[in-house]
Length: 503
Image (tube, one colour):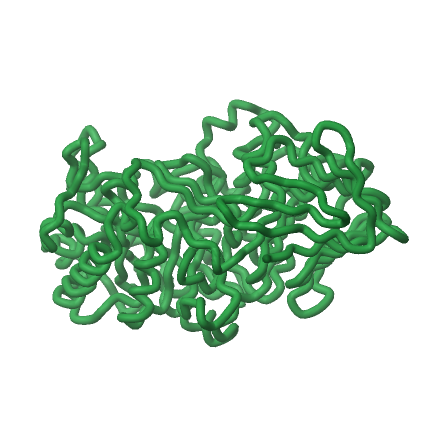
């Protein structure tokens, strides 16, 4: 199952612009719709509340949208929505749409207020278009809102932002990488492990993140000038999204390398960036998209329903494997995700390490499940076992779970249902849904400066983070203390098991 969603989302106004943003954003949306019609691709447009109530947008989609276009809801909180339910819109800038968490996102409101806001947004959408939206997405929606939508409306697909750190006033780190998962009721950023806590609507990750450079913010780019390029995603506003060779690399990486049964990418652009900046890149992407074979280009709701039909209500194991790099740096990267954990194995030149390793636990509540977020920013994360992005500075490449320092190119293949095997020379790392099996002479566990408490207890590393207690069990090996907080893991017979443990 290889799927692409062309999803463009629509805001009515952006008062940050030094031009007539209402007109410019309308033109941008119209050009995106014309492009979709020109190529005949199925597509999704998600409308913010202020666009839903706009007669201009109503007329645009009534006249130009075909049966290939799905309309859904882009759920950021705007002043007209708050006005409709009698809530104050606390924009310190005095804007009608404010991109800060408070007041622009659902977690800035009480749980009861969140229900009133979503009911009004859904009511108005149905009043205007004659039906409830099947797709609802946002950079961030809180868990109460997700569960409420799933329980009270027939939603087919949710979507949230890629992992990022301190971008646009919010941080998401340690999530299910790129593909899709069934979220937990108490923390939408974690897959659920049980039926009782599972929201039965899949959550897709937006923007097409680069599996090499999305994590650690371009630490492994040779040229610091490239830090000016913006995020490394498929967004046509940024360098990687408007460079044809990079886009071809993204498509090869997502759809030709091992994915364990499901691969996904989202294309498109928010209209706030303006057509002059993103339309050339978006048209180029459509040209490349037309060349793809065996990849389904679908409405988001259709992909959501197909995902649920294929996987039931259980989050599948998937992988995103980059065997080479669109940049000139000598790196490889493979992500493994399942309902229990995510991990990223990474090769830089002759060193292979696990640089990201997060445990999923449906019982750990998000920060805003019951409480109002009163700050301009928000954080969503999972339980870190290794997190070199947050535990080191921007130049430190020494940390991680070091597996080899004399490595060659690795290969990645499916070796069983939900099993990804990464191998090079006489080394291998096998990911399955319960554990990670490592074949290596010695492992060096170098956490750097962790924001979780870590201590060794026999053959187990015990953690505490945000009040949650969990562990990494090291089986068939001996752990000893090294220098500067390092732990040395010596496998018995050259093979050991790393097993994430919930308490």
